[in-house]
Structures are given as C-alpha cells and as structure tokens.
Amino acid sequence: MDSSVVDEFVKSLIGNVDSEVIKEVVKISYAVASFVIYGMASLMREGKGPRLSLVISLSRIFNADFIKDVFEVLFASQGDGDDVIDAAGMVSEAYMIKLIYGKEEGRARPGFLKPVEVDHGVYVAVYNDVRNYIDDFEEKNSIAFGLIGNMMAVLLATIIIMLIIGMCQGVRSEGYPDGIRDFLDYALTQSTHMALSELLSHG
Image 1 (tube, rainbow, N blue to C red):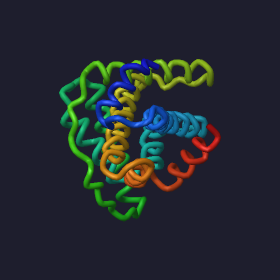
Image 2 (cartoon, rainbow, N blue to C red):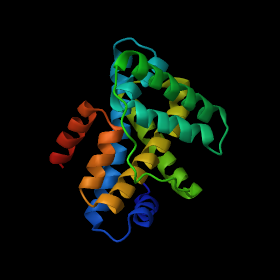
Image 3 (cartoon, rainbow, N blue to C red):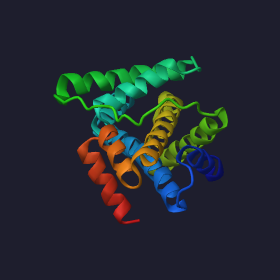
Image 4 (cartoon, helix red, strand yellow):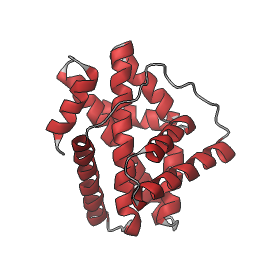
C-alpha cells in the first residue's frame, strides 16, 4: 500500500489529529473494500456469476443512500471509460435490489458531507492498492473474477476514497470517534458495521 500518499490525503482532509486516527480511517476504508471482495467470492463459490455476486455483495454491505452517492460520483467522474460505466451500472443494480427487496428506510445524509476534489495521484495510489489486493486474493484463494477484475478495482478505489472523505469530514465536524461512527452508520448496513467493530477490536 502506498501509505504515504493516502496518509497525506487523510491529513489534508482531517487536519491535525493523532496518527492513530489516521491509521484507523485508512484501515476501516480498506477493510470495507475487502468485505466486498470476500462476500463476492463466497457467493461465487455458491455458483453465482461474478457480476451478480458483486451486486449482491454491494447491496449487503452498504446502505441504499450511500450506494446512491457512489453511483452519482461514478456517473459524474471525469473518466468515461468502459470500466467506470460498467461500475456505475453495477452500483445502480445494487441500489435497485435495496429498494425492491431491502425495504430499507431512507437515511438522512450527514450534514457534514461536502464535495472534495481528489488529486489523481491519490486515486492512482488507491487503485493500485486494490488491483494488487484483487490479484493476490485470486491467487491465494484459487478464484478468478475474470473480465470484471479491473472494473472492481475502479469501483472499490472510488468507494475507499469516499469512505475516507466521509469519515474525515465527520471527525472534523463532530470529533473522534463520533464523526466516524455517524458516517459509518449512514454508509454501512448494521451487520457490516458490527463485523467491522469486531475486526477492529481484534486489532
């Protein structure tokens, strides 16, 4: 992981805070991305195709309103390549699943969330981290995500950056740890939030 680039990005958003808070923000963001990959792999082992597995995994991990935010960011992104378009389509499918089957109550977007311009170098650093993680995961677990591997990296890099921004803005607005908790309550389903708490409690 190119931690220096990502850490500096966090510092630019969060201001002068303890280095442990920076580490926690980064760790949480990457852990959530790994949840998506593990969930997808589990569904593929049950016989579902990679595209459907990714859509279901997204719908289980994120709340509908955050999924909608991800779609809007992808849709408005400067990159209009096939992978970005495909990722937006997957996110849209996940959002529809939440609406149709999730019977989920809408959540108010935290007032502290504001748009942030992200330097391309930050995106590239996170994308490369995710791409390497996916490649290692495939090799270690004897699974192949196939043609959608690069699209997954585009999508998860976007999600990681959005999670980092949301948690940092939460901390700036509401302090630590309340700001992180309030943003994650908005972004993650309750079961994902509990799994994340369990992971963090074990270091």
